[in-house]
Image (tube, rainbow, N blue to C red; front, side, top):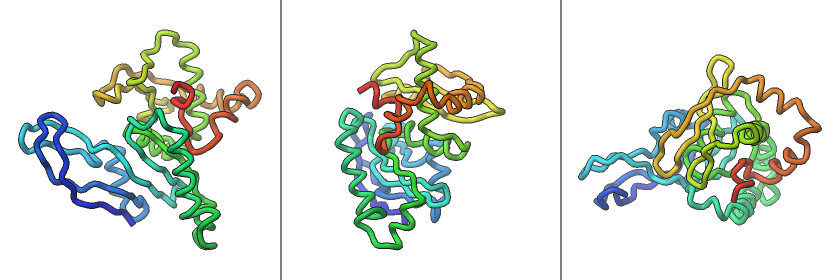
Length: 225
């Protein structure tokens, strides 16, 4: 089930108090509308009653989608620098619920789930978009590395991330996103054939593929922090 509580939060623009539902877990099988809200970027989006500023509550919840085999621990982007510690804690949480510390029935469910952790809304949304398009997230991150190798002046920084935002007519729509401002810096269209070429190159990407797939944090950002 999806769990949430009404909380009083402060507008980041003016500090005015606002009451809003804050989610602690999301079950996409029972609440597909919440999954759609993540994809259309309306989930936990707020408008201040005092100053009219639009903002989004930082994510901090577990996401379950049995139909698509996803269990994702979603964290604020500010926690990225501690990803190794967060990864260990989330792995323990999953093991208690669906792994070695769970009942036989729960372990059977857990065997069909891919465990991931993400930091920030863009990274979380990307996992849903990739799964819907049938893209393996390890190969997607390797594709991003390949793009960086051919674009030395790419606008990558601590605040700017490269994220898949859509797949349209055989092309991957990737954007450089400013996570602090929640805005698009630059957009690029990448042919799906480029993704296929990386996925088919078992030898050339073997070492990095192995590193990227170690643990639930499957993200190019792990190479940057």
